[in-house]
Image (cartoon, rainbow, N blue to C red; front, side, top):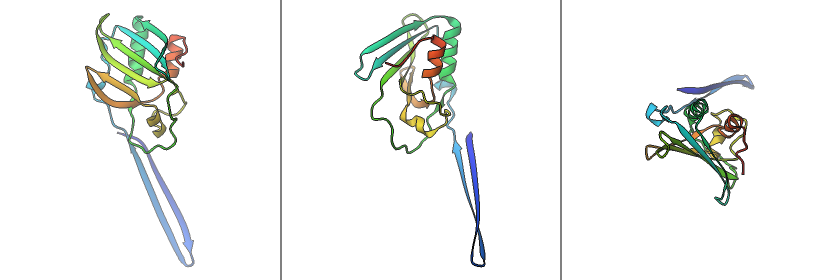
Amino acid sequence: MLDGRWLEIEAYTDGTHTYLTARAESQWVVAREASEKIPSSVTQITLRVANARGQSVHQMTVTNTRVVRRIVGLYNSLGVIQPAIIMGCPPEPAGVLTVRFYNSPTNVIATASSPTDANPRWPASAAAWACFPIRVRLAQRSYPSLSGNVITPLERLLHTKLNP
């Protein structure tokens, strides 16, 4: 699937000659398989925010069915981080948000973790998201990191701050 396609055409003259150049670029998006998405059987979600030293600074459990579905939908809407060379990423995250998805009160079926400072207003396809990967484990297996802002939507949905 394509996320974007650019074409740049340039015309110039040099003496009696006219030159025409064209440059094109396509940005491919790696699609997520259905097996890489969090199942709809989730009934409970826990969120834990840890500071840069790993100390827990905020925890909460969500069991409201509507809110649980919206959080699962948020994570399932994210795309895979696209290959890119990024220079100038922050040296250390401010903290880490860990989200656990349960299909019963004690059975964790998926885990997602992301830096708490990953809340810029970039499009989800921006290459800079590689600096803020959302790591996902589902059924004891790691999958490619996801990109996008989960911090801001979660803060709005849960009416809480998720920064340490």
